Length: 280
Image (cartoon, rainbow, N blue to C red; front, side, top):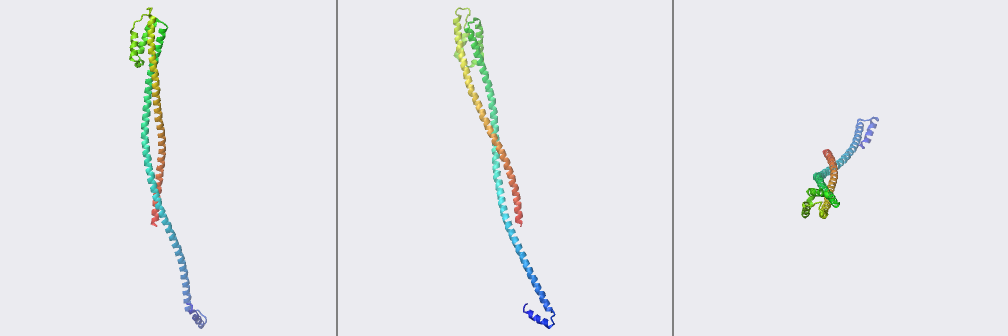
């Protein structure tokens, strides 16, 4: 286009300096060229900007998709692990509840048996204490040389032999006392003192045996009571520790349920975001 300008200039001189139609065309073409070049540069800039945007967006979405898949895998793993832990703790809680029922029933049964054993001991101890007191009274009456009390002494001894306290008396001792009761002793007989001494000796032996039985009963009851109380204490402690463990399990179960619910909600959201990212 440039080589035409000298010729166009000469042509212009030839026509007295007026702008020729050719010059107008050339000027128009040059303007169009300038506009086209400017538009091309603008379009190139717009393309570069759009290209960078697409590239950045693609990279961002690609990373979001990768992160989304990782999150989904993580949430799914969390749900699986915590669900397994939840089932384990629920099974443990169920087992502990069953044990608690068994131990509670065992504790109540032990307490009932202790009450029965206590009542039985107290009854036997009372019989022996009464028998010992009766024999001591009879012996004192005999030692005070009160002949008129002989009938009452025999009656007291017969009551002792008929009581539950006599259940532990040996057979030889029972025969000895029975023989004494059957013997006829006349308080008016000059030898009454001799006969009464024999009765006192028999009663002394009988009293000694009753006291021995009472001591044996007390000692045996002390062991029995200690066994019952120790058993009650052990069972009560097991129930206490088990109850604490159950409370801990119930707290853990509630926490796990909440964690699982949260993980499921996060999983749903992550899956929805992943679908949106994949549709881009």
